[in-house]
Image 1 (cartoon, helix red, strand yellow):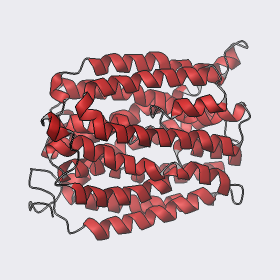
Image 2 (cartoon, rainbow, N blue to C red):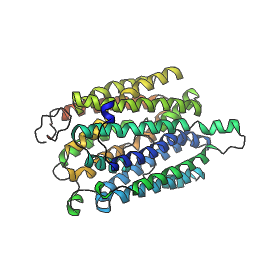
Image 3 (cartoon, rainbow, N blue to C red):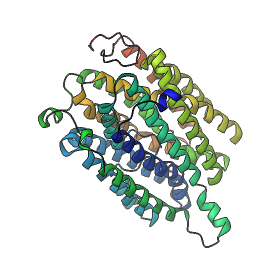
Image 4 (cartoon, one colour):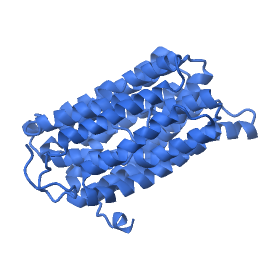
Length: 415
């Protein structure tokens, strides 16, 4: 792990990591609290699904906007605006806003249902990091980037145990919803850090060039985006907030128990991101993506039939140790496949593809679980297996550009 520590990071990349860690803390906290808070407010399974779906739709719309206008308006300016939107969203949840208002707020795209998200924030962050790093340093940088998010998310998930702990000590402690006010200082701190980034993080292309989006890499990005959309549709059935809700309904897991479980999940994710970068260097980005993702999806199917909470937790943790290894390798793969001036658009469009289909998942999960409680896991795992096989078939013979990337590419130009 020492080589990751020695990965050269500029002051701007360090600031991105700080801002990202603040957001990940909020997302780790919110991923558990959103589902349980809505349940305590007597929202139905369908209404919970609608809120989660609206969050995903919002991230898709915001990602499209970033891909089209992010470089033109300025990456830093957009980055700050997203953090401010996150603060306002936290206020809406804390004040017990009605369903229609919650739906409006989460459509801003600032709230994620997962700690390691692929929304407008990451579209900006991926392009800024890729501007600073190349080759092996880029792959390791993305490993560190995702590990920081997972570690901060772990602390956030653990913090979700504070509300019941506070109530056990102080009978007058505020309800769960009020704790969403934690989003406000966290998001405002993120906005301050985002505003401190230097002009070097902006697009290196001219205004006209950077506003064109995809040009030479259009075909490759469209192919990747189509497959990512399938994977994301499947992932929408089992977003972390829904898994927390399902554990509470199926096994009666408490908020404190869920906080410990998802803290453990985040720790495993942190380690897996660092390991993934090493595997990507040795075996290639695409091989690492498929070889780790495929067995994790078999475990996802098995989660549907776990008989007890203990067994379900073990299966979930085993899956977590593999399922996220494709994240840093996927990000490095996309950045390596496109020209520098196309990076914001490529990150935004591939991220958007993940969120165009993903909103369908939570709504369907809320519906199909009334037929069979574990059905969302069975459907998600099966679709993800199809994605893995299709990704390998489509791109296993497409070489990466020779830019020193530790990807196992042949060095030929893309086709």
